[in-house]
Each structure stands twice: as C-alpha cells, then as structure tokens.
Image 1 (cartoon, rainbow, N blue to C red):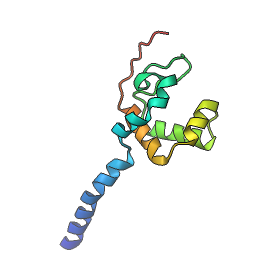
Image 2 (image 1 turned 45 degrees about the vertical axis):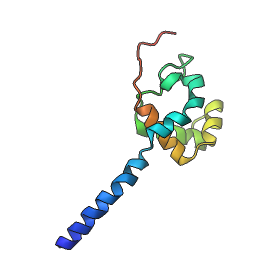
Image 3 (image 1 turned 90 degrees about the vertical axis):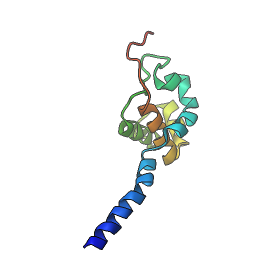
Image 4 (image 1 turned 90 degrees about the horizontal axis):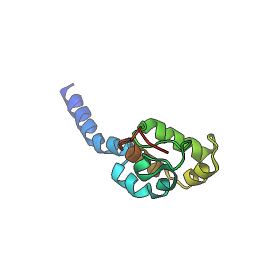
Length: 110
C-alpha cells in the first residue's frame, strides 16, 4: 500500500508541469495577441468600438470556449471566424491565459 501511495504521489508531482501547460502560457499569448489589438485594443482592455468585447480579465474557460466556437463556426462573426480558423489549440490556450491575466478598465470612454 505504501509503495502505491509513493508511486501515485510521484506521478502527481510529475504531472504538475503538464497540467500548468494545459492552461496555456500567458507570455506566449502576449506575443500571439498582436492581431487582437486592432479591434480589442492594447491587452484586450480597450476595444475600438463599444460593441467589441473587452477581453482583459475574462475567464480563461470562457475565452477558450469562445475561440473554439469561432473556430468551428458555431459562433458567427466574419472577422473572428477567419482569425480563429488559423489558431491551433495551443494558441487558443495561450491567448486565453494572456487575456484572462490582464486587468480591464471598466470605465472606458468612447
């Protein structure tokens, strides 16, 4: 029994880096987010139009789901469908990690 617990604990510790990677890499996402700035503003915090969403501070899981839905065509938006079509799963996780870590300025002025 003790041996099983040691093996299980070791496996859990070894899995931590891969579990952290599963949530995406915010630093990599920052490099990939340049195209997003055109509509959503710097760090996704100040969209150029009031009807464009603020990405900064959104929940990670929401951003992943939204990008996957744009990629699959379940969500319809010509710009976003085209942009998301080129994203790999790792890109989606990285972008979501980046934008979810940003602070949003909810007192934006248009």
